Image 1 (cartoon, rainbow, N blue to C red):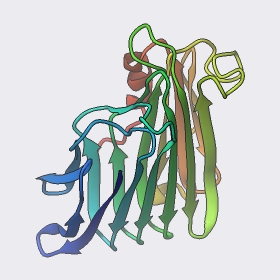
Image 2 (tube, rainbow, N blue to C red):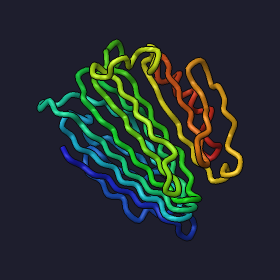
Image 3 (tube, helix red, strand yellow):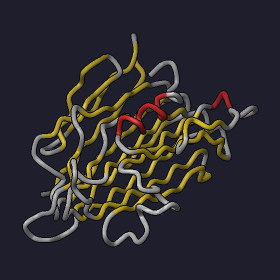
Image 4 (cartoon, one colour):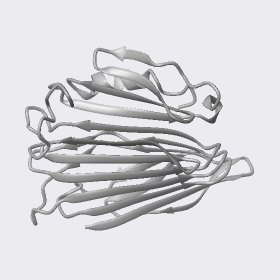
Length: 241
């Protein structure tokens, strides 16, 4: 299955306007608030062989929060091919994007790749959360790899990759998840931090908050389940989320 969802937010009189909101199953967009839209799963998946893409554009002064109504469950497909979800987001100066989906669950036998690229103009703000759960209850995960690149004012401020599953050697060892079943990250970019970034902090036994180059900081967490990971990341969510 091939599908693309696209949403464009611009500032207008009285707040943000969604001038484009186009989608097709299984990527179904629904506006759920003045500055909020949800992705509603129109079909199971992603399934092996799917090619899915989400495009997000936030204009100058606009604010957009994108969420999902449920977790994504990566499943093997009949063809045995890999599934791919691409997310491409751009945020103009003065714009604010909050990407807060529910987690990806890597079911047994899946072969999934997530590739996210975010381009921020100088003066743009971002909250970007990603979470990965290793299989359903009592299940070993399939192969899943999440690749994320974020650039601010033309310079890369974050590039990270997380991989789990049979092909990711040592994924459950001390250098990656340390035996945890869930992992997540929360990137916050705030132009107000240009002169004074936040201080690093320990959020828990397997969680930390770290300033990055540029007006940004990254929280990362691993844990026995999603609840543990989400609790650590929520400590770093800005007050306006």
